[in-house]
Image (cartoon, rainbow, N blue to C red; front, side, top):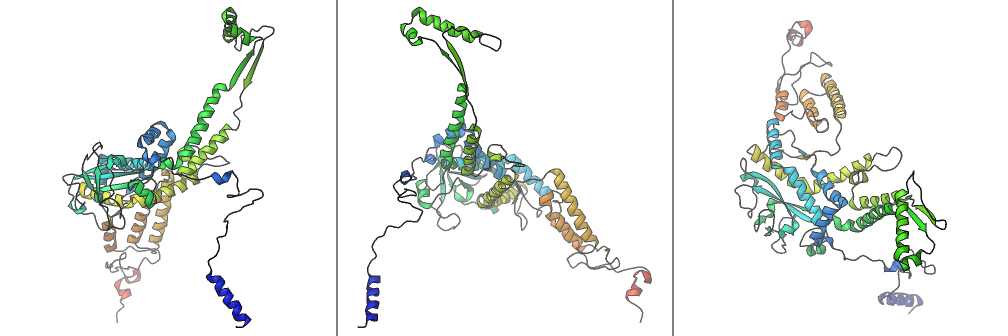
Length: 496
């Protein structure tokens, strides 16, 4: 065997042998200086443990919700913002139908019930809103097409701990809700539907913080309370805040040095009584206009405490809370960020974008279902094709800004229509589309646009004599009339 062949054989044998375990590091380390994790310093003892599982302690969560304004704000703020502006039913339905649906919304307190469902979902880690339909069995699947006038009774919120845990009979066919209970069993002490079974199609399910699979199993299929993740930051903030408040009692201390005081107190009797009377006299007469009476051998001193730096410390803990809850300071504490020309507007816009994402993820399908149910119950029949509810934006323009924007859009659309660049139906569609921003022209309905498509066209500035077909549809034009020099029939059809 040649040397080359021997080297190849040795290489193949080495590759076939198992490699010895080697110590590897995936971060910066300096063993001599003991810098980095795994170098024998105190950082090696750091770890994370499942020790304080607040989600499983509903009474503690309720005590925190009632006793801590921070916990109350964290739980309520997102729920309020997700339901504050409601939805726009669009222009596929007539204005009078929208008024009926708005009235039913108010009477049934739909958005208040959804807000409460989200609140308890965030506090307990899970909650459901039961869609109550009069005269129907709650254990059967919900068929929206069977709902008649005035059958919809509203949404009833039930927290996680009002329901009995379900670990069997889960949905296995619908990919969107696979693994969730087929039926929700209501407990005996629930606020409504006690000891009843409710089909999953009749509930709006809200979870706090979604968990991985095995952790979700440990929570009976529910999520985690939003309070659990922020607990350590909350304790730090409350401790710093309460500690600062305690310092106020020691902000101005006075000391009185009395020669032989220890001996006087030890002996007691008349000597101690004299000292007590002396101190009482000092407290009685010591004021801006009074005098401090002292013996020649006594010494009186005052000590003041400086609160410098405490505000920055509290602000730092508040910022950590804001980061832990994903709620900006201006919303959580009502406090604008520090800095020149800082108003918190950009923080609010980012926060509203996050709220919009939560709306789309958690409420899009339930709200569309509720809107269809509301239409059938308040108006009657099936909603028109294309009916869909859209969440109104949280960032609202002022009335002045809306008026200025509406005026600009009307002028632009009107100019384009007069020049013949767009037809009248197209102009109406543009104005209708702008209603989401301006709040006006929302009552333009599709029937009016169709009528405009069939109406006779109007002369335009580009060609006042040209009479094209009206709008975008097959409407017929109007034959030109008048003398020959004004575009009459004799001009367009000269004699042979």
